[in-house]
Length: 205
Image 1: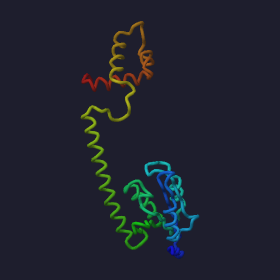
Image 2: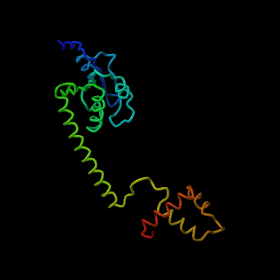
Image 3: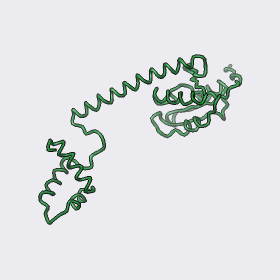
Image 4: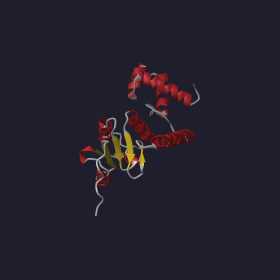
């Protein structure tokens, strides 16, 4: 025999489910949410990778939940991309008087242990943020050491800048700076900025 459906509670339960690809099915999560007492019409869904920016189901459910509701998910990784995002969502819900519950992880921010959950989430999020920052800085330093350009893509390469300098010095046929810039598909101001950056990189600033 299958498990009996959970009795209706005084709190309104709202569900959210997500799978990463069309090949995966939402059935497992939806079945778990309905057994926990969520009505099928109160379940919002997405078929999208956690890295995908557009998740209309998540946007919709966060707008739909009201004070006194409990937002239920199968696992927290269905809701957020990272601990940082999870903490942000959990805090947003808490401020509105909305609980957050994970079925498989047994975590419920609306229960007595809710304050402890937030403290743990905040601590983990802080560690995660620090680690990301340290990895980013280390990666940038390693890239610079290998001579890799960081930041916005350059409009003009060093070779093009060298060619422009030659053209500006010689000015065959009375070419103007604007005409030279147009040959390289950039504005005159962009050309001069690229030349300044090029001279700095070459140690000729």
